Amino acid sequence: MIYHEHFDVIVVGGGHAGTEAALAAARMGMNTLLLTHNMDTLGQMSCNPAIGGIGKGHLVKEIDALGGAMAKAIDKGGIQFRTLNSSKGPAVRATRAQADRALYKAAIQDILQNQENLKIFQQSCDDLIVEQDQVKGVVTQMGLRFSAQTVVLTVGTFLGGQIHIGLENFSGGRAGDPPSIALAKRLRELPFRVDRLKTGTPPRIDARTVDFSVMQEQPGDMPTPVFSFMGKQSDHPQQIPCYITYTNEKTHDVIRDNLHRSPMYAGVIEGIGPRYCPSIEDKVVRFADKEKHQIFVEPEGLTSYELYPNGISTSLPFDIQLDIVRSIKGFENAHICRPGYAIEYDFFDPRDLKQSLETKFINGLFFAGQINGTTGYEEAGAQGLIAGMNAALQVQGKDAWTPRRDQAYTGVLIDDLATLGTKEPYRMFTSRAEYRLLLREDNADLRLTEKGRELGLVDDERWAAFNEKLEVMEQETQRIRSTWIHKDHPALDQVNALIKKPLTREASLEDLIRRPEVAQADLYNIEGLGSESDNWQALEQVEIQTKYAGYIARQQDEIEKLMRHEETQIPADYDYSQVSGLSNEVVAKLSDARPQTIGQASRISGITPAAISLLLVYLKKQG
Ligand code: FAD
Image (tube, rainbow, N blue to C red; front, side):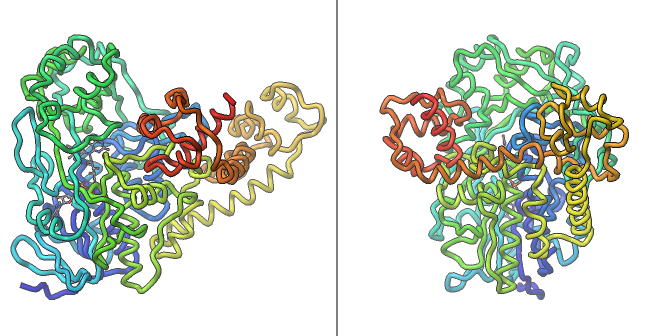
């Protein structure tokens, strides 16, 4: 049967990539269909109940700056918010929130159901309709044919999904969901390069069987950070703490004694797993000298008694999982409510994609999310938004747009994928971006919202708030430049109390904010010096732009210099592990390839300009 309605954009898969893709296309006025296995799992978090973190929080803010859903949903579903790296510079500060799974899912479903131009249909997509290298639509499991000008595939870990618990394995898309077998088979007939990856998840634990009194409590930050540029603290539900405990030698002995029962070590799993989210068995083998590994004990929700023990993802058999869990302080009597498992799935070499995320072989077909070799909700969401938007632009007959590396982490992500490909699940880090002083969480809207408005992604409400912010920033910048503290100023003593040495000549508020020891908030607390505006986002932006102006200019300079270091020599026996800030992945690649010059190093797949920049700093220091 052919469905009576023709769509501009069909998005297959209602995970994190799919929801952002469908919402973006619909916001741009496209007649959009979201086709997914199960409407009840829209917005489901397959693994840990958390959004954000280093590099990832930046992506969430960028999705938000372009009008996406993730930040708004986590503001409504977050039960513990923190700013990571808060003592470091603003470029590497990152927001992270623990989610109540049910509230997060409800918030996403609410946004989807209230989106104009978007229809949702529950059914598995089993086939693509392709005519002369042009996608024409999709076919569902029951043979229903939907026609469309463009199709965005966002089917996550489901393609040929194989779940492993110990040496047992069975087909599945994730626990409780069916795999995509027919679609995987169909895609393997097309000319894409396909490979296998794997990822894993820890056993879930019943909080009623845990002794929290022997663990370290980790409360959220106060005041509570907010994710969306449109969000407010009152959006947040009740806040609750997480806890910290550790593995120990007994845990490690259990693992070492049973490695032969691990599907990874017995050679049953072939796919490569996420280096930065290794299983506990991987950690014990790779870091054999470590006496303990940290576990964040994270609540799954306000009304759930399940706990997510972040740090002990495993695919060992269930009896060993129980021994591992019960060897850990506070978990001695723990009941496991869901076993941990690993999943292997098909992914496509992202080098077969254009920067728009359209495939090179089939016009109108876009891929986004985990099927491009990434891992993580945020990486999936960012790609989904770009793929949905570019599908819409294609329907509108307009040129594709993807942010550049100097505009957004989303640009870094897509450029890394499309030009370098990936051999292991790719996750975002601030170290992947060479322009990271420019790509901060706090300025994601300044980098992207105007473009988002031009593309049709940003609604009137966000646009008005953004313009108001710009106006306040402009006024505030003028005000701090023209407000002077002179020797007779009534606030002189209070100002002097904030700075290292008393003022010897007049200084503007701008001069004072530039001083590292002066926090804008302390200065503004002095009577007569505060701003009239309570737009804290605008005020914070003025502070950051004022304080870090020098660093930002220097970074731009460094990037230009980088271009001139092509022939700089690297000693043959150079120890890359001493370069602090290089990821383990980069250290391994450089140690393996032993490039002779910086130019050669920069052309090794996976060596980012950011890594080269760090290397240059070290070579210069030592040379
Ligand atoms: P998904 O969220 O997987 O969504 C895919 C959607 O497509 C689902 O709604 C599915 O029902 C639908 N679908 C699939 N096939 C079809 C079809 N044929 N027809 C219709 N609908 C279809 N990330 C981390 O960052 N760190 C981790 O440690 C981590 N561990 C993980 C462990 C496990 C066991 C799993 C399953 C995932 C893990 N993840 C982890 C990955 C994280 O869940 C994904 O990165 C993220 O969900 C990817 O989003 P996505 O939108 O690409 O796909």
